[in-house]
Image (cartoon, rainbow over all chains, first blue to last red; front, side):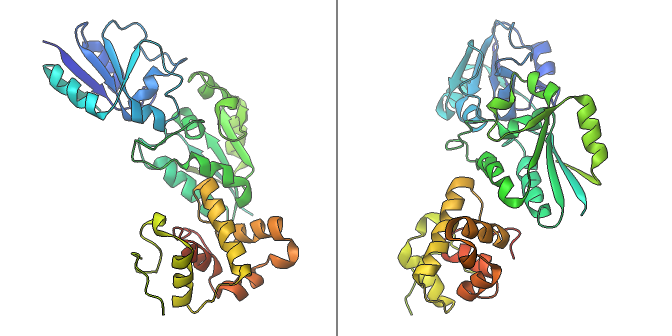
Length: 97
Length: 117
Length: 106
């Protein structure tokens, strides 16, 4: 049972990511979108650095915020179509907001 | 003349606070001496290289470059909040003075009104 | 009077900024009884360039400042702007230039 966890809130403003990380398991995926993308900024200690789960970032939201070129290495940038694919690939989606 | 301090504490694009704060600052600059202070995620407002062509939001970060034309010369941010986000003032679209805690306390003391966004 | 085949809002501002061209500008001006001369065009181009740079429609005090920098002090005042573009000049300049209504103009 793999779950895609989505987080759309900034890690410094909101407990959404922190709570998500309490329950995310190794086979799950984490998708950061909207202000959630700041968690993957180089230099930010948001708790995702030590994750073994797959981490995805919505590319359009990272570009809009000027951070597409300064993301931590272990993340995968995806477009809207791939976002839809992910939702189907995982067994379910849990939105943290 | 009244001195107004506009404080931005939210990231751009995820909420309307940033655009509203900028609009209010531009409006306020017509009748008051205005300064801008970026705290917490507000420092992301001025981050370079924002490209909103695929996100459906407006890239208003370029509008901060017009502030001198509106008579707004004093832009500040928290040095701590920049560092904790892995940023320096060189990463921002306009020159900003980074202040320590005491400097920010003094800045707030020096203004008549503080408006938060 | 030239018929304008572009959508405008209740106050005459373009609905789609990309609809703008010089013929449209002349049509908007004509509807407000303004005949565009070189002096008008210089101000209109200045406003459009400013919007291009900063995504802001310049209000009157900014327009006057830009004109002072570009054209010199004798062709940069609120009076001069009003002579060219009538009583609410910043509004009119931005309207003819195909830009959004300035939020805090005049």
